[in-house]
Structure formats: structure tokens, C-alpha cells
Image (cartoon, rainbow over all chains, first blue to last red):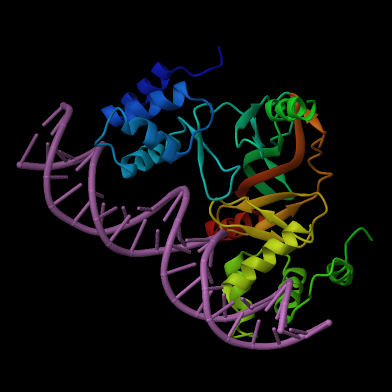
Length: 147
Length: 147
DNA sequence: GTGGGTGCAAACTGTTTGCACATCT
DNA sequence: AGATGTGCAAACAGTTTGCACCCAC
């Protein structure tokens, strides 16, 4: 239902003649299972437990490959660190200053017209990034504030 | 008219007891005069011509200080590199893939409600980043395409 | 003279690259 | 065998940090 399945994505790779190696499969599975927008380093650290020989370069290569083919998207809500998102359907992102978590925001809640032209520039991508304090952190702060 | 002047910003520093050194003044003037969203390195390279003893650390310190006090804003439309924006009034940004230029986009052209709450998260900042090909690059491409 | 500001160099983080080895067909 | 993918280590870019020196109050 709208969501592109893991099998769809794997099939797409096969179709394009791209080998689905153990490492690539592991990265894609990881992103599918961990939709909290992990960084390359987090992916590497987690998978290293299962595949001790895995190298950072392979993780970076793989993420690049998937991004090139539109299987995943790179979220640059934090400067310096890239986060990776299994979900490629249009949506927005919210970063909590407090806990660092990144939340998805439904595109219907902040309808930004993704028009093709603006000021005569051709628009290919539109990214809406929000930052603040997330509901969980606000709650924790409240709990701590009422002794 | 809406625009905060250089003098306003300098007065604000003075008010807060922050010394307006030669270096700080140079950085603020540079951002005022070069509204194309320069990077720290670009600022450093340009000012080094005038102040050969200037150090990168001072440029970074100064940019941080100004950002802390809301005199400028950091634009993170490119991963890895921070751009700095003299204009702190709400507006959006467009990055041209082709020439790397960053354009301001009037907030009225893409009205994004900067509401205080969304999904129970407290929203402090809203950034809309667009990427594509700018009018100038499209024009140049057209000109080249019609021999 | 003292406290904030500056400059230098080294450290650090995230990412990229070059190259030898391994793997799949 | 040939092409493609992997792992390692070194390189790289942008930024941050520690510390000695300097200068304005």
C-alpha cells in the first residue's frame, strides 16, 4: 500500500544487473528494519557485530549505490553527518535538539507545493527540515519539573 | 525597512558587551556585503588578503558568536559545508546543482506555516531547502544547445 | 594586570580514494 | 578468465580544540 517493499527493492537491483551481495543485502535489510534514519557509522557498527570483516568503505559504497538508484534517500538535516532513510516517498523531517532523534512528518500536515519552477529556477528536490524539542523530550522535561 | 542594518547589528554587540574587534567587524562587514551565502573558508580566504595574520579559528569563533546572538544564520543546504547568511528574516533557499550558487527564495512564494506544534513536537526552526538548476544555468545550457 | 580575543598547530569527525585481494558467473 | 565487489589504510575536507601570546580596558 504505497510502501515499497524490501522485495521490490531487491528485485529492482536484480533487474538492473546489480549483484545483491551479503553486505548489500545486510545494509538494505538494516535500513528496512531501522527506520529511525541511521548514519553510515551506525549502520557499520551494527552490522559489524554480524559481519566482522565488513568495512566502512563497503557501507559507504553501498549507501551511495542505493542512493544513486533511488532505493533510499540521504537526509542532511544535520550538518556534517548524513542520515539514511529507507522511505523514499515524499515526507518531511523533524530533528529533536534534545535527543537527536529524527522523526518523519507526513507531507499532508505541511503541504509544500513541489512545483517545477520558482523564480525561473528548475526545482528538482524540495526538503523541509524542522528542528525543536520532540514530544518525548517535552514529556520527560515535564515529569522532571513536577517533583 | 525590515532589513536589519549593519549598524543595528554592531550596536547590538556593543550593548551585549561584546568587543567589536577588527576581525569581527571585518567578518560582519563581509557577510553584509556578500549576501551570496559564503562558507567559512571563503570568508577566511577573502579577508586574509586584507588581514594576513587572520586565522581560520578566529573566523570560526566569530561566525559561531554571531550565530549564537542571532546576527547571522547558518545555512546547511550542503552537507559537510556550512554557509553563512547575513539575512536572518525568514526566507527559503535554493541550491543550484550546476553552479553551486545559493539563491534566496521569498517566504511568500512558498508559504510554509511555521507553527509552534506538530505531532506534539515543539517546532523552533523550519528550513525549506530546494535544489535544482538555476535560471542562469538553464539559460546558458539553452544558448549552448542552439548553435 | 587581568580577562577576553587571537593565531597557530594539532586533533577530530565523517567521508573518499587507491589498490590488492576475493568472489561470482 | 573477466568483471565486479570488498577490505584496508591512507588521504581528505571542514571544523574544533588547547594553549601561548597579545592587547584593550
